Length: 254
Image (cartoon, rainbow, N blue to C red; front, side, top):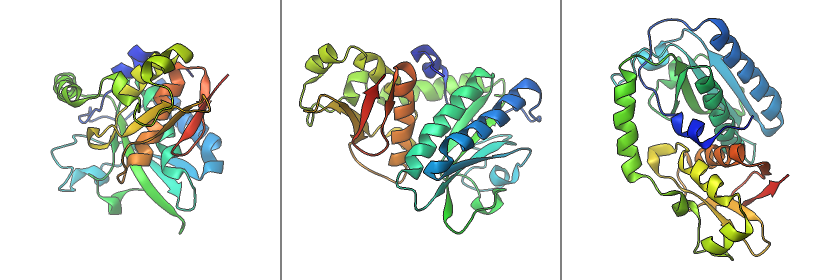
C-alpha cells in the first residue's frame, strides 16, 4: 500500500494510551496485518507476535514506568539470529505495521529497551531474539498535546530532507541526482519523516556511478539496521519501486 508524505508526517510516537481493550474493526485490522507481515517476511527470518491485554512488560519496569502509560497491547518483532538482514527487515515491517495502525485510528511507538524483557509474553526458539517492541492502542486525550511537544523538540534536531543525501560519497551531486531521478525529492522528504533510535537519523542515500540510488548508514549503533529498514519503507511507500536489502542496497524502480 502506498501512503502520502502527509500521512507519513502524521505518524508520531504515542506513549500514553486509553486504559481499555482494543476491539472491533481496528483490532481485526491489526491482527490481519500481523498475519500478512508474517507471511511476507518469514523467508527473511522475521516474525511478529501480537500480545493483547498484557501490561506487565511496561507496568513495573523502572526504565519505562512514567514514560509509558496504560500500555496493554504490543507487537514483538522477532528475528532469527542467522538472518543476514533480520533487523532491517523487521524495521521495514514495523513501520508498515505502524502506518496500518495509524490508518485504523491507533497510536504506536517503537520501543528498543525500556521494557521488562522477562515479562514479554512470547516464546522464542534458540536461534531467535527480540529486535524491538511496538506499543499499540488508542491514544489518550492528553497524548495530543504531549505528542505535539515531543514532535516539535524532535523537529528542531531533525535533518532537512536534503541532509539524507550523502554528497560526500555520491558519484552525482544532489542537483545532478535530482535531475536524473525526478522522484528523489519526494523520497528524501519521506525519509525525513521516519522515526529513528535516539533521533540519530543515520540513514543516507546516494546515486552511484552505476546510476542506481543506494541506501546505507552514515554510522552504526545497536538499532541502525532497524532504522535503515524503517527509512527504506518510508521512501518506498511514496515511490513506485523496491529496495534491495542491506547497507548499500539499490532502489529498483518499476
